[in-house]
Length: 206
Image (cartoon, rainbow, N blue to C red; front, side, top):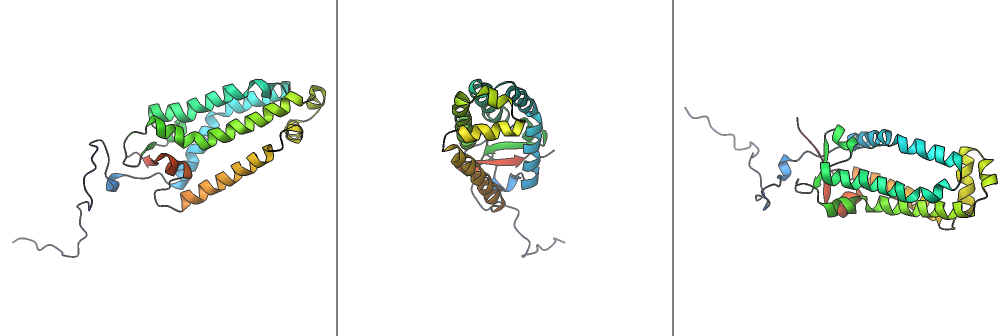
């Protein structure tokens, strides 16, 4: 005897058309990376970039002129880490270690343009901060600079830096707060830079 179908059973058929791109994933097939796992990925990336922090510490102790020579290499390294690796492997090492993948909204591979747009705000903040420190280091007294402790060195550079450097720091803080708020307020956990680039962060199954 044929079993009668429950009329109230939810449909298992997607209610939207097939995506035109054959490589695209349907919405119901995508699993988005949550807030805390993305925080974990950022933490892993921070640990992997600790050698840069160590280099900065040693360089800052050596001379204020370190900040004259370091901006270009730092920007290039960050572009490699956050743009090239995203284009090549679908995410930074921290994200890939936690099986997260940056993709376009339909689940397809992230494009080069999207990878650049995604990191553009952070690149602008990094470049402006480096420019402000560069300008301050050019006018710093090395005798005064070397007589100070590590944190005092940065306070000294800030005090003689461009007047707009404080506004850059404030804008960066507001951007980070806004990024967290936006990420928490949408179910796909997209940050502002995801909306700018048309990307999502997916969790890979298996």
